Length: 279
Image (cartoon, rainbow, N blue to C red; front, side, top):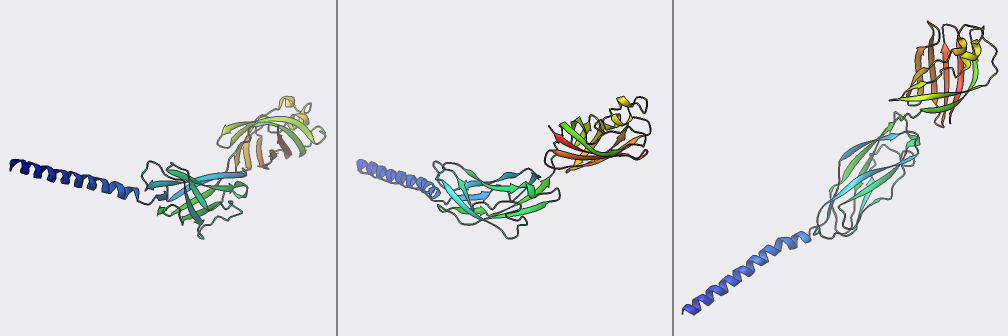
């Protein structure tokens, strides 16, 4: 009888052990059958686009956040569309991308790449691209379907360097030497940061040429000038060689490595226009 009771207890214990193992395995099996889940990393993002800088790629991350057994994940492909609420114009502000996002095998993220045409942006451009995740492969579930990308034109100033200068027109105070035009010289422009610059000689040598031998010390009238570049528009206001002389400078960055600079000294009616070509 004692032997029978022990045998009965052993059988019951064995059954309970098998039951526990089956229960322990059940959640793991369910997890491996869970669909893959993807989402945009953010619901919105803003990107500055440096203007007049050709085609620039922006990358929008898409994350794999669930599903599979996380030991080996296959290559996944997610489809998307550009929503009609977007204000950016395909073919003008950007090139319409392929319509699919790839997540590589055993990776947990991928990128949507959009080529942006910065040559069609200005400092006032502010447009959006609204992207909607749609269909899927491998049973993918989309948990966050939409993101809005704001693209804003960004001015970048990079005018520092050495320039060949051609002064093409100008006039002194009436007592100046006759100087044949165009008048050639070289000017160094130093970048002081944040769009602020110092030029080695604001008149590019013509002031000295006008007045050497006319006014005492004019042969040494090499005067630095300062100006600011705001999205290609140049402006400056500074003192000249002699007392009570104020120079007003305006100009443009032509976007092709050249600057057009005009300066005037209103007190004496002096003016000049020059083209600066970066070496």
